[in-house]
Amino acid sequence: MSSSRKPKTLNEEIIVCRRCPRLIKYCKTIAQEKRKSFQNWEYWGRPVPNFGDPHARVLIVGLAPAAHGANRTGRMFTGDRSGEWLYRSLHKFSFANLPHSENSEDGLILKDALITATAHCAPPDNKPTREELLKCETHLDRTFREVPFRVVIALGGIAWQATIKQLKKMDMLFENEKKFIHAGEMKLKNNCSLIGSYHPSQQNTFTGRLTEPMFDLVFEKARRILNS
Ligand code: SF4
Image (cartoon, rainbow, N blue to C red; front, side, top):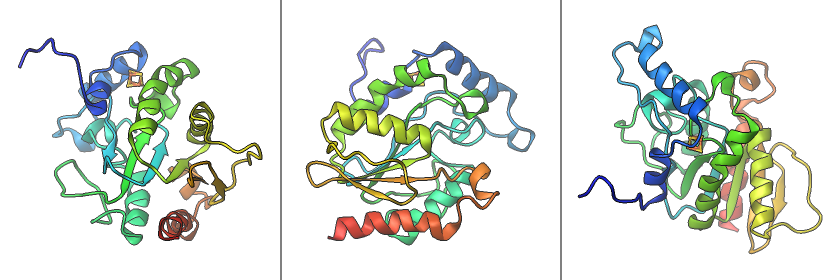
């Protein structure tokens, strides 16, 4: 196969994307420096592709890979505390075959769920700039158009805003657009729904802003919508 062929799949396109020099540099630097406890790891250190079932009815939108989480393991929400929360809840409601996620070879399979992000590269301080988010919108747009979702779950404020923007672009919002409410369901056109959730970051889980029952409620609701 010629190395000059153009990427075809969305994930191939994401992995080779180099549109944000600051983030590409940061991901590489982190991968070289490594955290002490992960010195034996070969860090992924590039854009992290979507993870899950390409035919999913549940599309989960996160913020961005964590520097020593997905930027290390190469798989969304894998190898960090946020991922422990996410996969535990996904497993409880039969969206995942395992309740945890450690590395890309751990056998984890998502069922009827796919995880994407507003930025596919780890940003310093977990904060992509506005420009970087804008650049990564093309990947988000393609994800929304390729995945046959019925329910979208937005994790955190930035994911919520990016999701609303994308849904507007796709003319899926009704006029009575509601504000973000944790575990609140917003009805969309085409019999779809949007559910907002606080991000399962340590900032929220350590402070009690997000508890396990609160987070479970989001996935319980998604399951109920699919079953209705
Ligand atoms: S954040 Fe998105 S647009 Fe920017 S380099 Fe990474 S994959 Fe490309």
